[in-house]
Amino acid sequence: MDHIGFGLSDKPEGFSYLPREHARNLQLFLDSLVLTDITLVVQDWGGPTGLSYALNNPERVRRADHYVQDEMGRELAAAVAEFMGGD
Image (tube, rainbow, N blue to C red; front, side, top):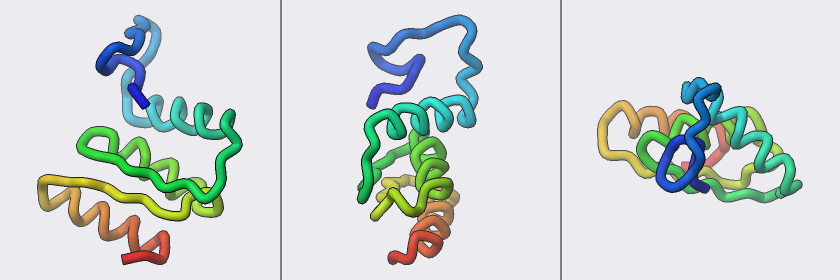
């Protein structure tokens, strides 16, 4: 998924571009698809967006993989994995 303002996506002036707005947009998108047993794969700046969805929708997310390159990201990924019941 190409988030608003990234890559080739639209860049509307009225969008705040804050992580919570991207998380809300992802929530709306995934809700519209009526998916279950989701595996989320997130990286870098998309991590907070995808992991927010996983934390708020544990009944729909089977696994969340967060690829990180720094210590803070590894700690966040470990906390989410523990919450989701994984390793």
